[in-house]
View (cartoon, rainbow, N blue to C red):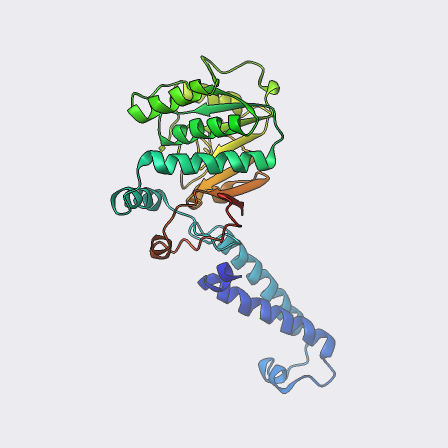
Length: 303
């Protein structure tokens, strides 16, 4: 309930619903002798119309305030975890690198492992299509593919735009060494896969989507194969959510890394995971992340 009580609209909401309850109860208590405080509140009136109007007003105002809280872009989730803006997400990442001296491949390995574990908790073993972009989100996807192979899945990778970074080249070599096949283009028959890992774009993405990724997203938006998006559903605005025009992914599952980004409030799939269990406690406090406790040694949890 902290996401209501910590919100100024939420505190007004509690008062207005209280007004609704007092008005509703008074309908059944009047004309019997009500509590003294209720008599004073209603100016000693016994008008049923006034009491019903008070109850209805409290309910309507409370409903409007509840909608206001639900659409507040900086609200908390029901678990209390903070949603990050794009600037905050970038700042958290840079602080991990610069102040805590994590390397990119360290965090990528931990993130990709948590993605693979979350995926395996939801989908049965089979053939998996992993679609990786040229950035860090794509690197998470390549790490995820490697771990899925170790978990007994049969991943294949679509890597439409190769990165020239030394790190990404090493990740490709590692996948090749695991016997993971790389595809040249998106398969026409997606129904052969039990799931699709969407690792095209991360929180640095800014619309619009450009070729060749726009055609890929257009095709994926039409498939019935479950899509598992890493951190950000590809093509979504990091804060504004799915595009209002053109194709938009509607993933079955989403794993937010470090903390959910604002776009996650638009997620309507069946499973929202949190992964990336590497945030130092002091840093979590600094950004008011309010991260939930992971169970045992697990690298992910379901929100």
